Image (tube, rainbow, N blue to C red):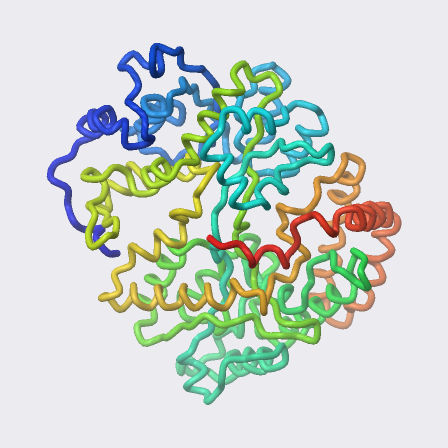
Length: 542
């Protein structure tokens, strides 16, 4: 990757800590804080706050711990706020937050991606409204709210007040559909445009020995991992759809998607054991070994790059390309991308210094902090070259910067988002880097398009927070219904898709699913002119 192998002139960790003091003024257009860290400008006391921080186990030992490392110190030295970071295990964050809340020890600023949990805190009156605080104490975040009104809409609760703090990410593709272009060429086929064309191509990939080894050992596509997702996208199988101006629970599209998957399974186009491949590891290995013709994948550019590197090592002559999800009778849709605006934080109702929380949110939202948390420090982690930030040392970047994602949970992250940064680091003079760059640019143009929108009515994270009784119904019925569809896919004539549909509808009714339908229908009627729906996602200018 471009610039990654250039070595810095002996910048040590201790040198970097010294530089953070020298460069303190670079983060905001304000003087550096005092060395003691106890007072702000003109002798004013610095507010003290607590902030959650995910513990992912990804911080190098010699850099520090989640609550005491190179960058927690940098934030304290530069933000004008005394910040104590509270570690929260990423794998069990909600349980930890609930424990802290019950003990009266929850952080002042709760940073969490689970919107259901954030909604729960609102209904329990454990968080505070922020309208007046932002008006009085904020500059950067207030400007962000004005620039992107959807940020305010998504953070506003049913009482009409702003509670949520979020980040503006911009458009970041996160799901992809790849096809073996070399197999298409060998078999004289073209990129499929419809569901039936895709089926015929998968059948050819499975039956006609496209790798030329004389064995029947290739798959038309993957169904495990992210594989089944593109089929659901193709048939708009998203559970809730707009029909005749109302939000309704869909069964027709679910049945169509299950029927298509059953055909794939029965024709031998996919791995027969795909249901046991829970997280898609086997299907990933099949693809990397060159055994899969159409591959649904998910991940960021870094992960795609790593996978493609392995793929090309195993299959030097293979050629991949990104394709649009084929259209069905329900339309043509794109796989989901990362939410361009994401709600990620709330302020504890018991926060001792709410104004200090807003001050930190402003600091983290500022353009200079966003740049620092993405590139590091100039002269230490990167240099400017032809107007671009060029990483000086890949190993140093990976060790000291690459894990800073959780410091970017609020604010103006669209200024330098993950997708942009990864593409910038690709060295297009190298064939492998050039391939990934071209595929990702193509994915962006195909998938971030109002002409081929995501199939859902809105992003998952933008769906309304369900009250406890409705959440109970949803949690108890959704998985059993999915299990019925899966049973039909793999059971041949012994259990048909039509039987699964009938059983699913019966189970839905017995589980009070109709109450959930009415709740969603009423919510949509009340909010269809004011909420954030799919049509709104493509009009933001980042």
